[in-house]
Image (cartoon, rainbow, N blue to C red; front, top):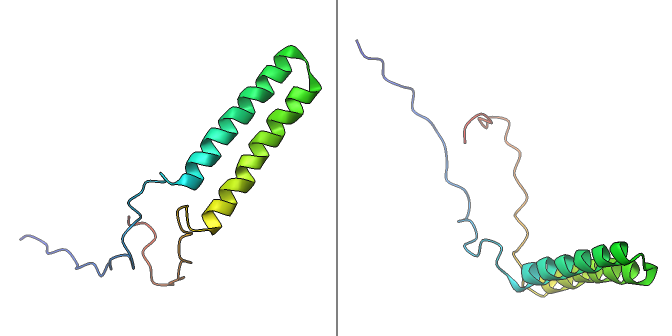
Length: 94
C-alpha cells in the first residue's frame, strides 16, 4: 500500500527577489573603484613608493564611501527586509 506524504505548509516569500542582480550604479562604482584602488596599491608595492600605496588605499576606501552614498540616494539595491523569527519554521527545507 502506498503511503501518502504529509502536506507541507510552506508559504511564499513576502516579495519577489530583486531582478537587477546587483547591477546598479552603486555596485559599479564600488567594483570599479575598488579594482582601480587595488591596482594602484599593487603598482605602489612593486615600485616601493609609499605615496602611490596611500593613493591606492584612498581610492578603494573612497569608492566604498561613494557607493554607500549612492545606495542611500536610491541608486543601489535596497536592503532586505528584516527576517521574522518563527519558532515553527522548518529550517532544513529550502
